[in-house]
Amino acid sequence: MISEIIKAINEGKNFLITSHVRLDGDALGSELAVYLMLKDMDKKAVVYNKDHTPERYQFLPAAHNIVHNISDFEHYDTCFILDCSDLTRVGEEAEKIGKIEKLINIDHHVSNDGFCFLKMLDKKASSTGELVFRLMQEMRFKMTKDICTNLYAAIITDTGSFRYSSTTKETFLAAGILVGEGANPQRIAENIYESDSPARLKLLAKTLSTLSLDLESKVGSMVVTQKDLMETGASWEHTEGFVDIPRTVRGIEVSVLYTQRGKDHFKLSLRSKAKVNVEKVAKKFGGGGHIHASSCWIKGDIETIKLQVIEAVREL
Image (spheres, rainbow, N blue to C red):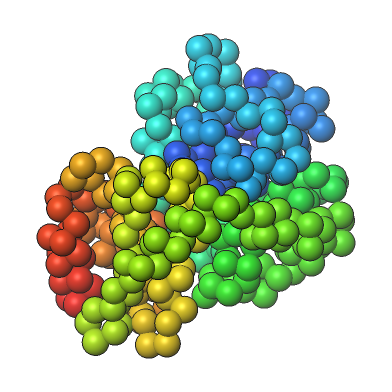
């Protein structure tokens, strides 16, 4: 399949590149790396995202070229759909994007059922960024410093700075090559992990006060409410990484972050250590993702939702 993807790249003229809503480092780094590769190949390319780029990722090379409105989807002959397990994850323009002649899906989510004919899927890969790296290696494409910066950012964010179980020998080899070709680990890490706003820290303080431990302290959870956001002046993007905090408690197997998006509407982010497959928990509520990192949406009051999630984890 990779040879067919390379053929589509060589034959294509006008490329659209997109990813999922609520952007993360893997989505953005992968998109921008592909964009820069295509531009270096003298192809016409546009990165379209429904959501705006979170502040911490605006330093990524070419991030300022991302657009959020497109009216002429029929203009594109090829579309890269990156880090998406399902076409609907790109947002409200999914139907129009789905009509583009050639769709190329590069992804590593367990819940991906192969919705594109042209696809590069590896559920054991650390990140979509690592898969894009493999593609460029297969193409023997000479990666620039800017491309390496984007791919390194993609890999470190989706591996939790090389801490997660999906991190393999191949992941480290890829990272080593990217650093050797110009990615600066210190600068990238400082921009992503050491550039918090006062609003985020104030929100974190409020969120930590909601920490609860359940199932004999095997499940840790926190809640972010709309009221907290208003009082601290923070935004939803500032909650990135909060879900990992309960998991740092000794004995915790599953970490859950409940973020309120409406009066009775919550997004759940789930993380786990070695023993629990949280993708199964998310799937029970209509979501999905990875074995140790998944998400879903649930309607209801927070206490009822918590009981439902705890029971789902207990069953595992």
